[in-house]
Image (tube, rainbow, N blue to C red; front, top):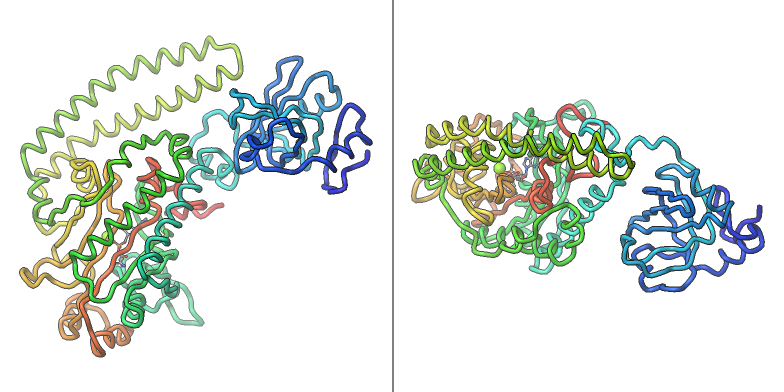
Length: 526
Ligand code: 4AD
Ligand code: MG
């Protein structure tokens, strides 16, 4: 069988006379992206991609092809016998080049479909492990390299990309210089408990927990700087908010004090949310994210001190409100359980494959909602008890963060935490040395801390004393102390955790879907 001039491996079919006609077709047809099909109405073009789904209705076969820019329905008529049988034999995720005439069709996902006249199969796949039915999370995580092909996962990666670009643009447009900080570091910056050791020519060094200390040196050279890189924490916590490897964007600003840092943090988050809303509406819709929750995000964000947040947690009015929510959740559960039974019943009676798929997905979603709600109902009384008994000086855990952040409709900034629970480099408040000039930003809707930062201790003697208090050996930090010896100035910065921000903006339940290949406690494959 003769092939077009741009010979690709695989077999080739073009009707009605494969060979001569097909050669002509492929020489003439431009290869275009699915996204651009709307501009090609009535033209003959080729698209390249993967078979996402297939439906056959006797006289006609529908191939649903994706190419990374969109989905396109390709229609093969049974009259083209050879094409038709080839189309019918293709398995999900087979790689293809499809040629055909572009027709406007409002039922096709991108508004245009292809009336197929030629088909080249690059690789015929069979038994693709991820079907369009519901799968368990463990199975999907084990097949993460393939799971990325699902429209949902691809949408998340696109939002992530947009958020990264927006954050960089924000700093680039405000006179910041990007400074890359090392990944291998001789010591801890965020507490020795979460260090990953690495053998470094016979010495033990660690994967960076933050770029901050090096960034402080760069800020003394360049004024406004930022870094963006992977950071590592050997956190022994299996929560929906923790990764062992995550990406952090960190600005560091000479002469900035706490109020200025809060303004930068607000500006950054608004720029990121704004970019998601203006560039990724389609993806947010696909993810089921209600944009209204994001459209509210505008400065100024509510600001609380740690002490005010503790008062809020201990306020009986809050406990009453939480108890009312608990009652409402219990009532909701009572209605959802019969709904699920009805769905299961419908599913058992469904005859057609597509109908079964749809109902199975709905039932799986509902089952998951019920599970979440049951967990919430079981946990809520414990959370209320914790809030009631919360003592000044303790660190907020995920539960407290969730309770606090749920009281506001936009991110909340919490400052002046107890010195004893925060890092050695944070500057104590001149008004009250028991607290530090730090800022944490909690995302709304219970997504927890997305930003942590502070004004830095800029006095040599005070910093030394603080390091001694923490039992730190000053030797590996002499260079850091030099920054306080030679032209020390007030300064500070913060770090925004990219994955937590992606989880919040996309409305995801778990952080593991926010990064292409998550590194979690108990997961390093693939
Ligand atoms: O609050 P953290 O530990 O702050 C720092 O590392 C500072 N040195 C940053 C600075 O001032 N330049 O971490 C900052 C953010 C957190 O608010 C959170 O969003 C994210 O990093 N983060 C994590 N994200 C995912 N998994 C983990 N294990 C994380 N630990 C922190
Ligand atoms: Mg923190």
